[in-house]
Length: 360
Ligand code: PMP
Image (cartoon, rainbow, N blue to C red; front, side, top):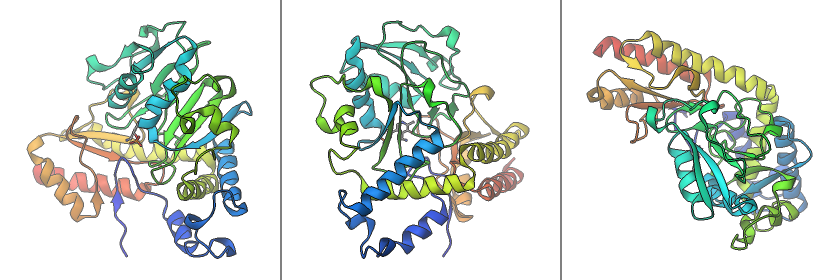
């Protein structure tokens, strides 16, 4: 068996130890005589899996007791509608800070549910930087301020937490959740699809402050109403049970590695190997402003686009896959989430050097 170095933006590489454990437990989970996939979500076995996963989210992220942890479905694109349906009713309007394709999409979707104010946009810099908070035009009457903490396509990440005063801060953390410590109390709501740093697609994590629950618009479907789900312990409808189980194994793995501080150090070390090389090379370049560079998704360009195909082909031959950049940006993108080992990044840089020597 040979596993590739998978640089996919998501669904993405998972820790091998987690996959092995899941394989071992596939037919008979802890003597239950069944796979987790086959369990009733209301049975004691699954309830213990669910409770442990939630407890680990609370422990790893340091979730204060006045926040609910919800395991939902619909992904982050689902949340683009679910967030405004639940939160925008307070004043009928919300602020959106647009720093790339994903937050742009969030702002567009929210327009169906209320008045959306584009508080700031990085569009002028082609989404290669994050507008300074001093330039944001925040509305004190907004129901919330929405940001995307890490733009998966553009590779632009906040390395600071915006201060929105009494207005709740809402963050799409799909592509950097669990990659570094965060102060949950600075946010009103955090959401993230699981398929980058947490597990398989199909699971959406929502961490929401209690006072933001219970104000959904009447049109909000019950399965997407935070109150209904909070009251039912995320079991109003059948939750994505297998995805929750795998996420629970990933959380245990993160804890065993030393938690989010250790993840951050690991991610900083990996990203530095790649960015240092991009900065010293005259053949490759990073299009992103230094202070906004993502530790998770690293877009880079070759000197000549005409070499892109040969670069990808050569990478594939060496077992490095999914390096093609998003069509809106072009070039390459290496997604180096928690589960990407440092060896993967070293192998990539070694290949990049070799390719530069041949084509530079
Ligand atoms: N937001 C961000 C930051 C993402 O990276 C993605 C997926 N790449 C999405 C939203 C959309 O997620 P989904 O397709 O799971 O709804």
